[in-house]
Image 1 (cartoon, rainbow, N blue to C red):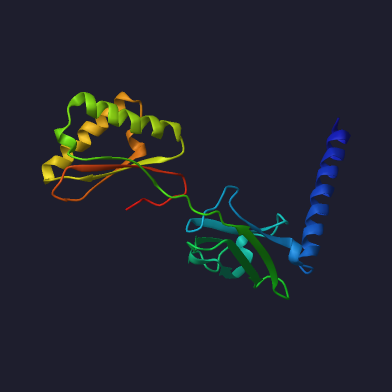
Image 2: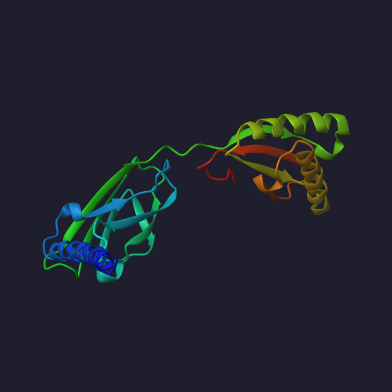
Length: 219
């Protein structure tokens, strides 16, 4: 039994030494394929902020072992410059994001990693309904109008609701908001999916938007 344990330990030790030696040998023979750019595995929209990362194919190489000079086309770096992970705010009108990372202070000669992704056109908010004189409507009419909006919002499961209230006076904003919240609850819509914005306009008008995923608020 003891001999089997010693043999197993020897095999494990040999395997570890072999892997370490292989990785150590690559420390002086870096190429472009040794580092790569990692983008999000989702659709990225023009104007969106994303994280981009440099990764190494070798487990022994740690981010603290090197620094990076980044250059970006189709966006701008807003955080993390010089580190393996950066935040990029993509340009609103860009069709593609290109990233170039120069890895420094590690191998004798600097090495580079390149990458690019296509940027999808950002979807636009949709004005679904506009209701004038909101507080003057009878309860039945109001319930029907609000149900129509919330039914559409429920169909767009990844979208957010955006409701822009033009109250005639400050107190009207709270009254209108509370009526809408009650209707949302009756129509089984989570309140966390709805954003309320108000601005005094000398009229009780309410605009109801659906904001698709990746879109900016309409106002």
